[in-house]
Image (cartoon, rainbow, N blue to C red; front, side, top):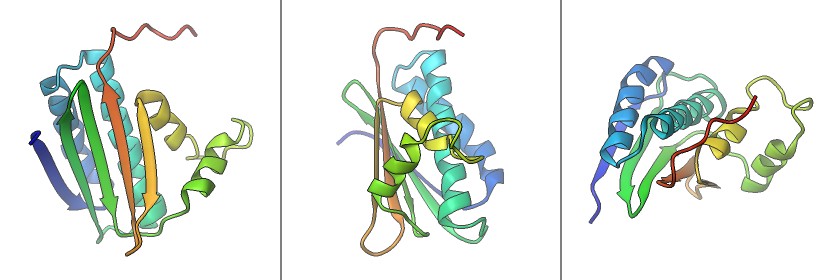
Length: 146
């Protein structure tokens, strides 16, 4: 079985200071260079921030689980919550909006999709949601022209 690191923490933004170095360490352990490690950390921050804001409406007394798994060629991040969820179709509709139509905070999902190679969101039958992000190692990323 591949090694899995599981962290369960309160739905409070102050725990991001624990998650950033943990995600960076895991990305490096899986063989990612600095640029991709930073993108992985950014995706973790965006995912957790979205869960706190949207699934839990800022309720600091809920739980979030992050599972980090080394997979063949990269890593997988799985986020689990027990808050409000939306349908995957509604999430896709929000992502399809043009930048002008996006509301503040509406760029998180788009950013996760840009930083990672795989994005999968599903509401869970018992409530809450599961988000899976994967990043595969490839040739070093080129700087995006501005």
